[in-house]
Image (cartoon, rainbow, N blue to C red; front, side, top):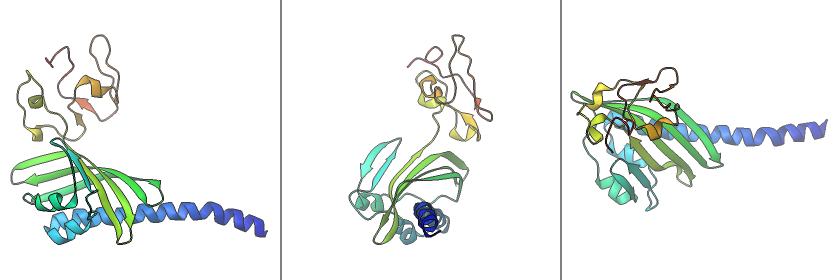
Length: 195
């Protein structure tokens, strides 16, 4: 009976550690979003790893370092929504997460996908890598007509066909087999848009 208890404990401890890691990362994620809502710079910056190893990536490129990140604060959004949060423990003390965001600056609305890498430190859980991407729009593609980013509603996919392979297959007739809830606003395949 004692052996069964030891085996069950050996199975349960890693699961509990994983649950604790996910909970720790989620608490930092929630604190980060709440700091944005409250326009609280100190609380916002406290969520990030204070290190030259902090990584930030997005449409404009890749940067590292907390000091530059802390200086580069733009205006706060009027509102922020974070949904479809997925957190996965990579190993003890490391959690990867993605979520969909929607922010509003006056009448302009921006939506996209963001990633976070959380690490457990002596000072608690911190964000050590952050990315944010908006879906590609026809305006970002050569030869396409401009379209405001807000014109794409949730569930629409604006991308080149090379990226569509993640969601469906391009047939010879350029028809797309799509996942439920994902619609193609405009065909941006190489056959219809000059690269």
